[in-house]
Every structure is written in C-alpha cells, then in structure tokens.
Length: 161
Image (cartoon, rainbow, N blue to C red; front, side):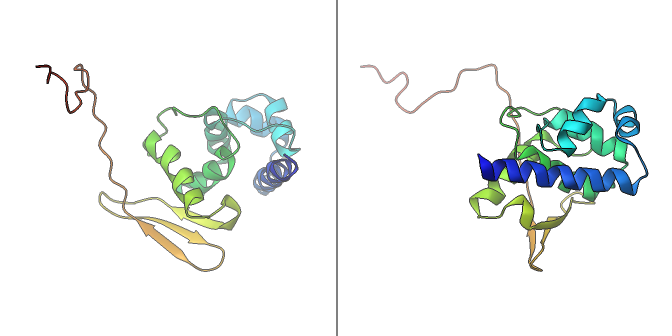
C-alpha cells in the first residue's frame, strides 16, 4: 500500500507540473475540465486517484496533444480498479485502455518506465511506446468486437444420445 501511495503522489506531481505549465490554478483547470476543484486538489496531493472519465476531462482541460493524452491516461488509470468498462473516448477504442496497461504490466513494464506513447496516425499504423531507457515498442493492435443474440455453443452441446 505504501508503494501504491508513492505512485499516486508521483502522478499528482506530474499533474501539477502539467497544470502549472499552462499557467492554470487548480480552480481554472477544474473549470476547463468540468470537474470539481477538490478532484484536482486531491489528485495533485496524492489523496485519491480518479477514474478514466475524470482523467479524460482533465487531459482535455489541459489541452494535451493526442500522444501525450494517451500517456497521461495510461499513467493515471493504473490506480483505478473500477474502470473495467470504459466510455468511448474521442479517437481511441475503449478496449485499448483496458488492453494496453494489462499487456505492458504482463511484460514487466510499469508506467514509470514509459517516456511517451504515440497512437496510430493512420489505419493499420502501429502504436509506438517509447521507454525511458530508449527502447521503442511498436505494436499493431487489431480487435474485432462482436455481439450476438445467440447463446454461445460449446463442443458437446446437443450431443445427447
């Protein structure tokens, strides 16, 4: 828990730096983002973490460029245990926000090791993750979501004799 608290505080420092770079007070950022000032204050001071909806609003309020926005969201969402189903965010499919942090953690890569994330700029282009150690990870992510009114069938269904 102590380690997690330190990471939450580190994210707060990043948020504060981004806010100050833009010359915003906490209240101004909150107004630009459409969130309560207490959320900005608590995030900056490591008192709480936010869900993806609040983080996306704050990223928009900060005016982060797309590649920085994705990196910011990935850094902040790792603390949220409730964001299993995410809302649609402007240019990214919600599956990306669930898959990418999980995939990177499985490879032993923590958010602190990520220098920047560059989302695909055209269809079929790879997502690039630049690590602080100079490594560049390039991935093409393809997924297909399907919905079906039929119940799934399993091998052996209807095999009663």
